[in-house]
Image 1 (cartoon, helix red, strand yellow):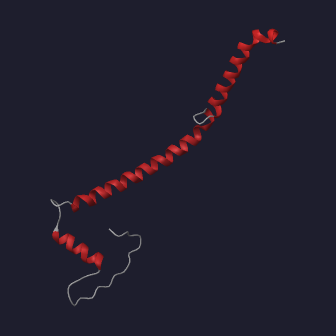
Image 2: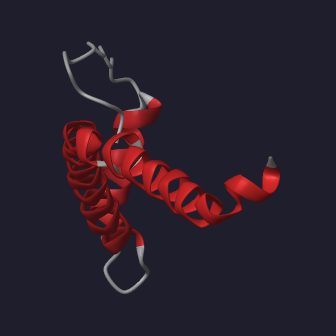
Image 3: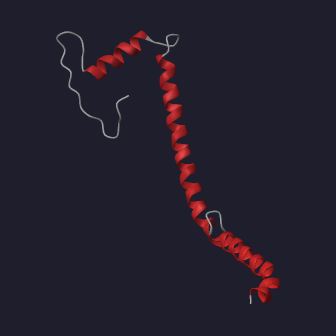
Amino acid sequence: MLFRLRPYLPTALITIVLTYVCVQYLTGDKGFFSQELRDQQMKAKTEQLAQLKSEHADLEARAKYLRTDNLSRDLLEERARVLLGLSEPGAYVIRQPEAGRVNS
């Protein structure tokens, strides 16, 4: 019986391989039907990248003012007094939290 099916084995093997490739083309991770999911992921990653670039630029600007060649002693002293809640001797400091502001 195996001898009678032997001429059809290459055709069956090619059919199986083509079926597998077609199914992967349509439904695989990079398949035709998963394009919308990839577009959504790309949009989310693009937004995340824009946010990270903005944070990076902000941190670079802050780091610029902390370098010794750009350091303003008056600005540094004023900022330290605000963060530590200190003022001149005998002065009262009343700190109120500002809405939506992060310590900087």
